[in-house]
Length: 65
Image (cartoon, rainbow, N blue to C red; front, side, top):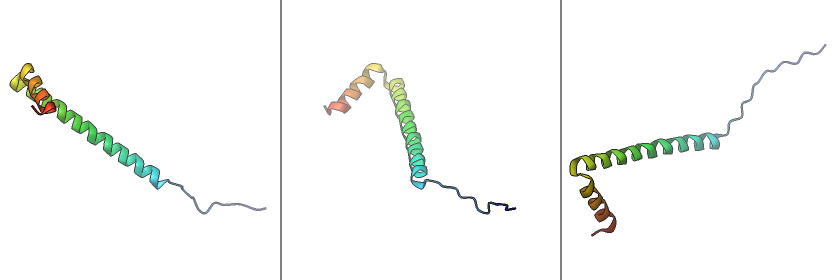
């Protein structure tokens, strides 16, 4: 009678895939933070100077005039 026993367990992990997942997650979190910061800055500008002046300043910033 022969008995087979498993003495080692092998786990295959793809390091490139894991690194890509981490980098993608970090990029998503960073861009979400930048977007939230931009939104809060826009709300602050609207509260401090009003709608018309904020739009005028935005257009001046885009055109450079």
